[in-house]
Image (tube, rainbow, N blue to C red):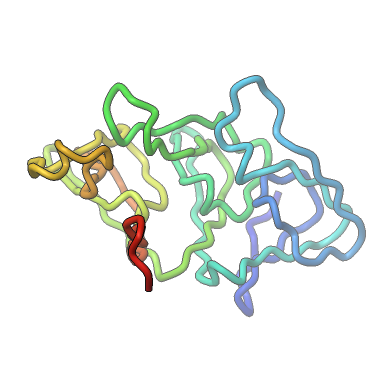
Length: 203
């Protein structure tokens, strides 16, 4: 399968079987047949599906207009945030799973998709930065900024808890993923947090 062509904010791919975001493709020269991902436990099913096309197809996201195409070496497994995967060859998908931000808890877990061989096009809200970590180096990334990585899975990190974090049932607000080299990490700009308004408080 040939590599995708990125032009005019879209990824153009030839006919084939793809792993694609749930709203994709946006246009197809021919027909596109989609179905959900199989499996009993499939964490990335919410964001991704299987799409078979009969002609050239175009993939793009109005909410995440920045596209990044990454090659995946045959002996490498890449972890990608499922919600940021736009399109990839379906054969590249190894499995989907939850990346735990809070150790020993599924709270705030992030659905990720493991990919091997081929390529993947990622759709993000801002430009993507690539950082290569040497052995022993450390990189801390906000969960909403994480896009993809190659190397060991990150560990969840929480700074020192304040008194309100302990007394209120909200949990800590500042949680991060920490990567330890050797690894390669891709990340984008962080989103503006939306805090819940306390009950009884009007805007």
